[in-house]
Image (tube, rainbow, N blue to C red):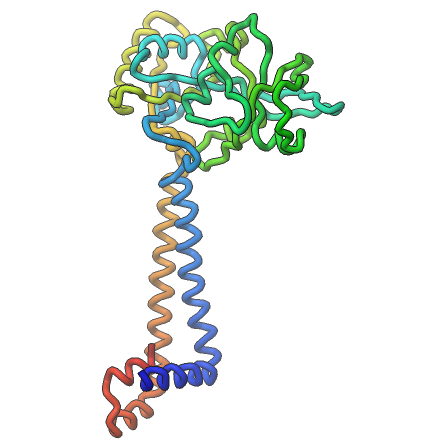
Length: 325
């Protein structure tokens, strides 16, 4: 133990005597480990845990694709969504939203706020638990129902000071009074589509309100599978539905359906660049380790006369190696 402490103290003195070596070694190690750590954090959030705040089990995204460009996703029309729901009843629950910008009046001020129209089951499909009150429900979609709104956490904190008594208040949205029925957490995970991440408030997608024609493709569709059949089975069934709709409706001719794990559809074309970046960072780490090894060998070569003397007076090989570590 005494010899180890002695070597440790000697190593510190040797480092103080070679500041250039210390600076270069720290830079090599810092650049290599920093690059791989930062890149892995991004890849981990984007590819391994794109939906960190949600239970992603059985959660998929559904989009429409042209037969001539199967790699390009499009939103869905509401008419098609209703047909998909009928065909997959008991197998999956489908929800949808459409991004929008609202003129919102609250507390005597008016501002334009990004939000979304969402089906009554959208939050239930995602598995979102409200911070206050409740989320949207299927009954809120009824055209004759009272207008309601669910606030995002960011809007709740910014405009209402995180007041827990906000439930039941009236908020003017596009000139119509909406009752606040709940507050949901901010959905900012990397795998969330931009329309979800940017939404600060949510109102029901009411029956007969816009995007009713089959050619009005504006809805982001999310589904949670309930029978455990998997995304491939659901995709096969929906493609059969799409073929039937293409034959029955001119607006659907040349269109099909794509299904992907929710989160992957949002990452999309970024997957390959992210993996390439991770590989490049690993290569930087290997280069840094090689440079550090070269510096250590150069330092050892400079001290070879000293080591020869130590060996001559009885120092063991392990003792000499230990002074280099």
